Length: 543
Image (tube, rainbow, N blue to C red; front, side, top):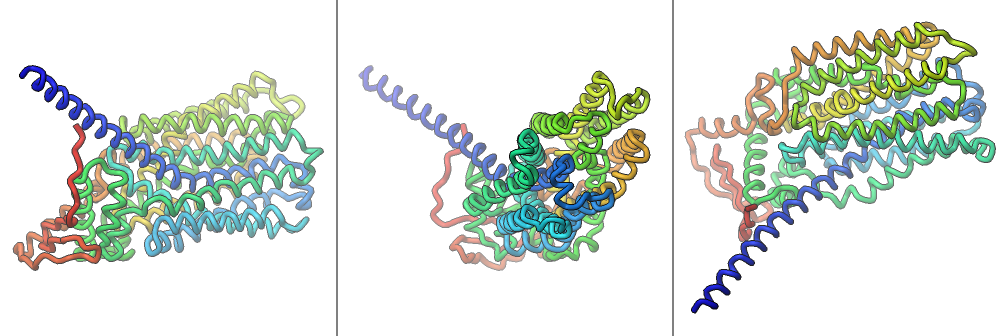
């Protein structure tokens, strides 16, 4: 009698162990898959990082300058501004509608295609025809406007709220990856200028084909967001299938489907399911203005200028172009490491803390950089080696403060604050305010730097102080808040709760149980929008 009893007990222990192991294995697979699809979407940011850095790198190429007949300061500003113009047009008028009507994946893919076309336009521009090169910059800007809008929304809508900030931090990290690729390719080419000839700069440009091809190869093999499926015909089956790939239990899937449906009902009946909510809803207007401010602030902290004109800046400190190329490449490499700090800080300390701490750190760095350069002697158009190293260290330290705060956190905050009915358009508009601000600074900074030298950095120090104060008084904390509950932080009503209350006000009138197109049973009673799927086996909960 003892042996059978012991055997049964042993079997129960084995079964319990296997259940726990299976549950934990599935949990880790979900986490890995969530990060994989987020990385595919975040690859759109590589397009931005690469192109924002590539022309900065080209400014150190004598062959590029000769090829286009010695470009003056005004044309340098025009080349830099060109891609921001394309990005602004796409972000404000094209990115949102494409992501909303055709899907987030189509938005990312169309942006990648535009970048591929633009890369060929720039690489094979006829000699002396700077206009063709500028046109290619405009097209690559359009591609960025489409891809960045769709990619940031995609991550925000599929990431679980508890780790949304951590996953979204990869977004800014991939900007640094783009810079990393551009600067190291440029550094490698700078060491073989005589052998490459004009291809010392063409190689840097054409290498931009790599990432959009990678995006196109993967983007249609990752799931579309459940919120997009629910917006387009309440396609429950597709929405549930998408969520099952990134949520741990069936209960999590059911709860999120219910919340999304209630939010959609409320937006349609009480506000507007169209972009008119951007000016009809007071809380949306409020967050749009704040988002405009912090996205503009991201580019006028000084980082946008450093990323575009660091070659020109370092020419005032170093004489060797190869040294400057190496510093740019090292800065991009450290930028990846610095951005990773956001993965463990943004959900632990919150978005607001990082923005304030980052602004304070950047202000101090800019003051010291300006003081060190302007108060030390210059010989033979360069600084002494210790002074030059100090300036490089301080600019790297500036990047250390910028990357996890005003670099990564601004994107995280912008992608998560808007309600579903306006999210694509509002995120597209907000993110392209970065390019509005950047285009203004890029146009006047070359002349400003030539006339005032490093005194220009005192301006950036003052701007960062103002940004820190603005964040303290005007930017609410969004850490851990669900997307459908975000409205209450800005004086509005939770759209999910609003849908429930709206149903209650209809006297709980039963209008029957219907069946959606996918075969799911839908309880259409207002205030109790429960979605259940026929013959779905229960998933084991995590132990």
